[in-house]
Image (tube, rainbow, N blue to C red; front, side):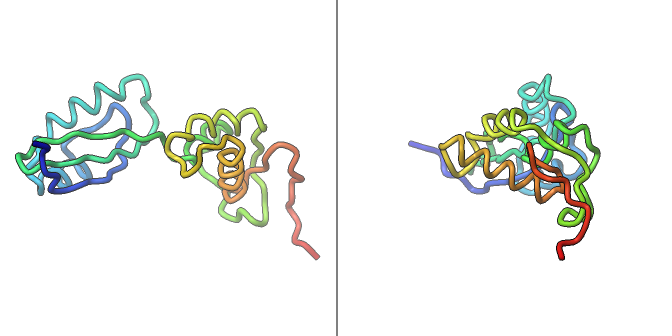
Length: 150
């Protein structure tokens, strides 16, 4: 018989750096999960991806065992990494702070395809392009707009 899930916990954890400190410890502790066991297995699975913050969905069962699914990094994080930026534009609609090539957009879309709500690569590319534009990053041959429309 299948185990009954008592809770699903969604967290953002830095790859290879899970530890019992907040937010991991309190989130798992209130459900009676072995925190160190989660930290060790998460760090083992994310070895080599250090520097990325990864979404993880943890399913806790009634016997206090757990399993987890590691999702792909947020699109905005991948775009910032491709453009070598620390943060996105504070005024995204008014100024463009960087540019990203169509090839980079396609690579990010292929990486994110498993977690998006589409299976079509062209639609996935459109989603990534929209995220980039909302961050103040020009895509491909977009004109760099620094002035207000008249």
